[in-house]
Length: 214
Image (cartoon, rainbow, N blue to C red; front, side, top):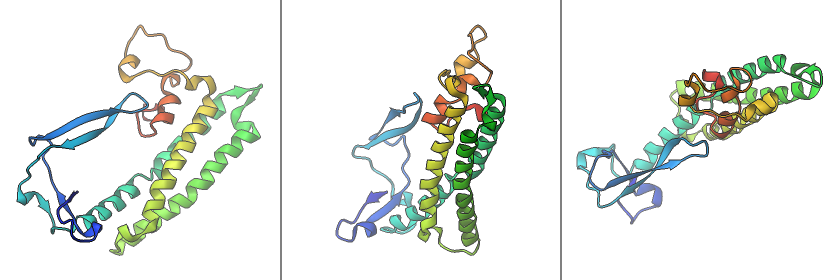
């Protein structure tokens, strides 16, 4: 998104360009995330020249296009099905692990915590279905505040699920091994097979490689 016309309203002076990352003047600097991985970058443009044919759509209409794209991106980031799968996995683990001589799944507080997250997830699923229905009627999803709600609340629920997992697995949430380390045959493991990737990575990066993908 580039500003081409500074003499109009801010939203109207933006155009959408496709820029080859190998274009002279483009500099990319990776940003290390809290879990040690690299998924985002700083991108700098120094006197970058882009062909006119790389313009997407009409000039000065870029903001309209990006609103549409962001609406769909937020919708895709809801991760309702992923959160539901993780809750099922948490319930399975809670049925295996004990505290104070009682299975976690049988303890009122644990059951209450799981139920609270599930209660928050159901309205999110309904909202997602409503956005789906509006899209099928050819409505402009970018005008739906629901798409922004999906992104915000979906992220909060993913974090709540991660915290719930760490509560359930307890000390097994501490071990952390990279994908390469997991393949080392002589590496001693701590706890069950799912322990090395149980809680830390999921908590720091909900969309990373966690035990639910293994």
